[in-house]
Length: 99
Image (spheres, rainbow, N blue to C red):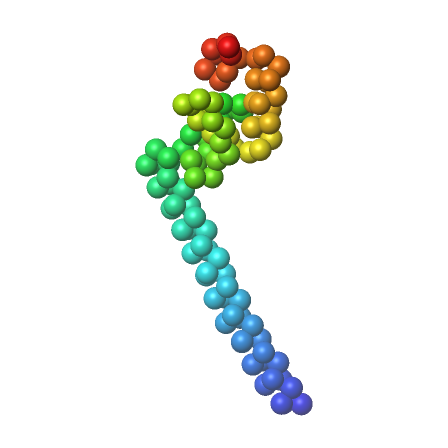
């Protein structure tokens, strides 16, 4: 009977040890991600999506090139809406009519 208690206690201690390490690692990863996002914002590497107005990191954006101008979007959905609007003869994001 004592063996089972000792075994159960050992298993519980091992579980707590690994669970604690996992939680610490996840918290550290979240802090690093937050720090990286703050650095990108501070470095000015965020761009505004012309379709929905969301700010997106340049590295993570979906882009469309229109001549020399590059538009950055937060998602493929926003890019599709923009392309559909332009194809239907809508205005460009700057408010300039398409030619």
